[in-house]
Image 1 (cartoon, rainbow, N blue to C red):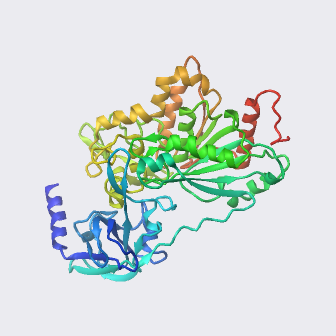
Image 2 (tube, helix red, strand yellow):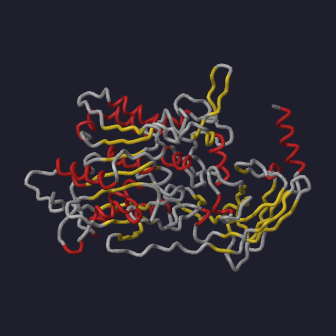
Image 3 (tube, rainbow, N blue to C red):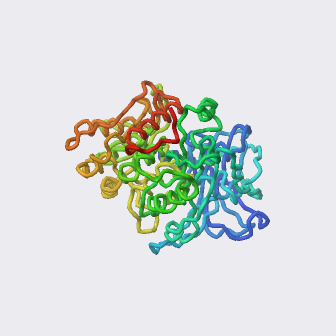
Amino acid sequence: MKLLAFLSLASIAFAADTRFEISYPASAHAAPVTGRVYVMISRSDDHEPRLQVGRVGIPFFGRDIENLAPGATAVLDATDLGTPVKSLAEIPPGEYWVQGFVNIYSEFHRADGHIVWMHDDRWEGQHWTRSPGNLYSEPRKIALDAATGYRIQLRCDRVIPPVQIPPDTEYVKRFKIQSPLLTRFWGRPIYLGATVLLPRDYDKTNISYPVLYEQGHFSLAAPLRFDQDPDLRQAWSRDDFPRMIVVTFEHPNPYFDDSYAVNSVNVGPYGDALLKELIPEIEKRFRVIRQPWARLLSGGSTGGWESLALQIFHPDFFGGTWSYCPDSVDFSDVEGVDIYHDTNAFYKQFEWRQVPTINSREINGQIRQTAEERNRFELVNGAHGRSGEQLDIWSAVFGPLGEDGYFDPLWDKKTGVMNPRVAEYWKEHFDLRYHLEQNWAELGPKLQDKIHVYVGDADNFFLNNATRKLQAWMKNTESPHYEGLFVYGAAKGHCYAGPLSTADRLKEMAESILAKMPPETIAGWWKQ
């Protein structure tokens, strides 16, 4: 190990003159920038290098900057951390397409007294590679050889333009509001939005309709992929198909493209904002039946977790949830990490053996990424939890506030060492299985016939493991006994949503509404 460390340090020292100098002109951005700069290196020019960044994408490297003036230079060299290649010194000699990038942060004076610098979402869904206002250079083909060294200047004179909001159609409507609650918390304007799918003949009737709140990552596309699903579009227009309103929330924030729809000391009162600001605005603008039995939830992955969490935390407000491949519902398995028993997130210790923790896999079991690789990817994206990625938003939503105003991390992203105190906070506040266990006497009667969970038994992020733990617990519930509905797809990955088509699932949901509808209520929205 000492020899390997020596060789690694030696290679970095040997490549001391290997550097990229990144700047931007005043014509692109007139003011000094606090944020983060990157250099991205690709063998292919099929897309710009910035658009090839991803969990298993091309090599890129990052460094924070503070008050970098127009025309001044930020240096990225062999000492800066990269992913999946750790250092510029390890890039093999050859010709590559290279691109520089400047991610601009904004200053937030939060209501809790902390001042933090983070990326202010521009309605792109917290993706720095395509966020409006960020700066990038023209891709260049350059010969790189760390053995001889190089000093390359990258001028980021291109500006990402504003997001183009899709136009409304007969079926799909969009709106965006400023949230007083979230603006007060963050000290800057924060917005919520909704994309609404209307039933056929909506403008020709005065009928009020049931509503399905479909959750997921930020998107301005039509709910349920309506524009991309010809079978759903055909069913939607039939006289014998239930007429419903389907809504997706837009709630990007400085940490991620989605807030997880709960109140958090780090992200803010998004649970209150959605229920007290956005949903009332939806019910004011559209003819929605304002009754719990007519409010359903669904979603996959991130949306799977929050559709389940909204139902559990607000059992009197929603009438049922269909949760697909939800993020970890029991924190004893968070993408392979047992936060309660593991001492290190990067490996498992079995007597004399140390085995890497696998973060994600292919359906055939092949390793896609280890936990250490995944954490390094996020760390290169952004320090202090500013990666805009999955592990960081979990720590921001589920974890406590840190002394510096950013979240207190569950583990060290460089070493993997766990913090048991933070794990206990996660458990007490957001472990859904534990929350049900602690509050079953109150929640059990309110959740009868409302929980439906679907997941592939080869989920790429091992989300089936935590789901099975929730199911095993629910099988033994008493006073009342309620097992929920759990469906597993054999050899199915992320994000399995069950055997039914979207149209058939909507019919199933409509039948659930009819079963819970008060007697003598006229269901003008579905004439079977």
